[in-house]
Image 1 (cartoon, rainbow, N blue to C red):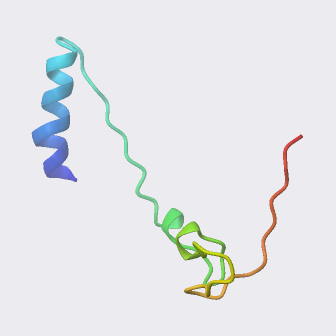
Image 2: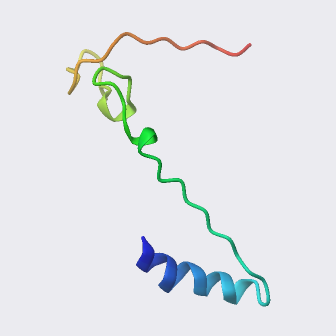
Image 3: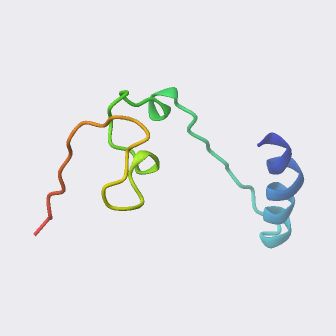
Length: 66
């Protein structure tokens, strides 16, 4: 990520915004990368009806915000 930032992102920003200084902020908190073992995650859901989950998941629901 550092290589991409220093070799691509910052030079592109400097070319697009001459005379301006950019601030790049990144949130790499580990709390956002952890889930319970049975959490509902899109990557673990079935692509077809009556398929088998790759991991057991707890029941979930969707509440419409009407």
